[in-house]
Length: 171
Image: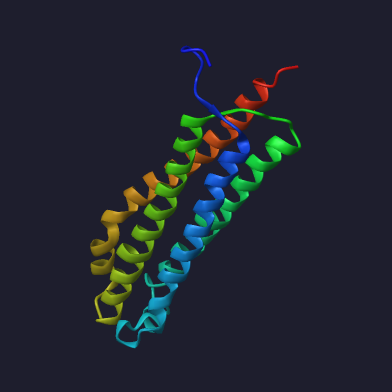
């Protein structure tokens, strides 16, 4: 490898990275859902009132984007190698893709699920009004938007990595 050439890896290695991330995120999904069984937390009650319902949304986003999305990227990298014949992708970009994907998934899940859903649902169960609850949880709206933007950029980066890898195919 030349000094000027970027460090590259086989897309199968990238697929393995995302598969490991998928397995880790499955475990995190199970751990995050298990407090529903702890009666003193009153999660089943908090899930029935706004903004406690945001815990459902946060969990769905985490499972959909964080877990299933990581699995999809694992399959895409695998297919890029086996179907498209891509032999090399840039390692640093793949690592950036993996890191930004997980930062977005965990950031959205944590802020939307805990800061808005759990804290807001607790405030609702304690009898606070909507204006007070909105004031309590409103600080999290912009960071959730930033994590969403990071997730979108992560997806675009994944597409770029595949297109860049296709451009590296020696014909």
